[in-house]
Image (cartoon, rainbow, N blue to C red; front, top):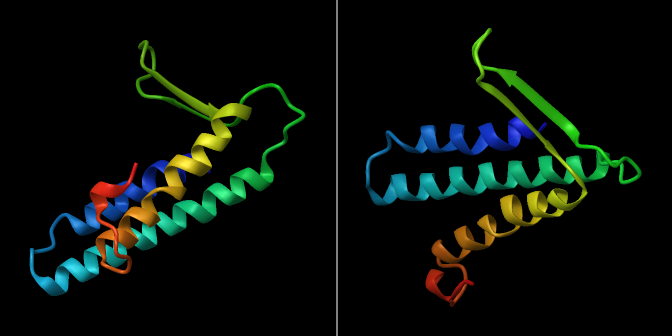
Length: 113
């Protein structure tokens, strides 16, 4: 699950990368960015729902050994404190920023904290 939270924005940015800079493609870029952000939001809500607060260890642990026999090892998971940061940072701020840049509100992107 955490791997999806990392891969979906990368996939969205790779889709946006080859697009030209026209008004039509800018609209498509914003829709792709908003949709990838909303997908991340729903995945993080599912992670929050599945999180067991009675366990004191890391949950949703993903481990990747990059090279057999070397010291490179990638290991990550979510604990009780970082769960709220995942939901808040990865999903709560991005849709608001995209909504502001699409012109659906009167404030400017620089007004955000």
